[in-house]
Image (cartoon, rainbow, N blue to C red; front, side, top):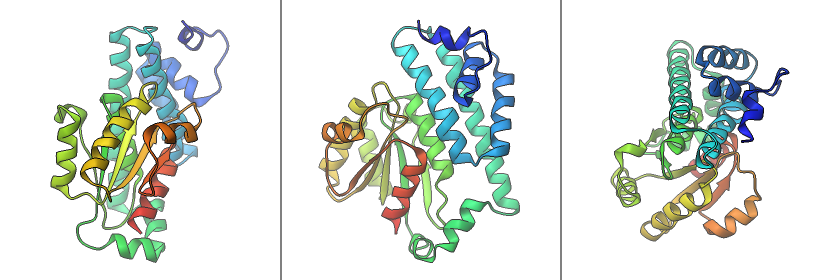
Length: 249
């Protein structure tokens, strides 16, 4: 019952991840949202996602799979995180429409990436390895990948009934880069299965495998998932974005 240390701690929890997750476990979505807004005032989107929301998502999945929290509480956490991510995405779009954002300017300033990304038909797909938590992480990734002229799309987990349907969709969209989003504790197993299916169908496809906030050694994960020059394994959204930019360039 280790999650109770987060939920019932007497003294303030200063780490951003624990503070937000603590309020979510307590069912206090309003305070969790207020805390999140505070972090966004002092850090960029990708940093808050990597240090606050991704760890909270991983904690929720881990505690639920271990039977340490019940399904209603797990569902509440996921739904609240989804609302937070959607709201942040809407705010980001509004800012882009008014004046653009710093990440877009940075990408445009890099003429090599921007010019190559501007060619017609560049498509990046963010695929959930298994379930809704993977989809939420994929949505966060899609929001931070700002490359001019590059279409970034997240595929809903519920829309695809099986891994084979995801593979078919990759072929349909003629994706240039595919990002597999996988949240612990079952991240490696789910990512490995989907990566094998994709690699069999598309030997030359550029793949980024995100094992978000993975607590283990990524070298060990690489051995389990599979090594090849077209597959890059990362643990943070920031690293995933960097790999996507390299593939596009």
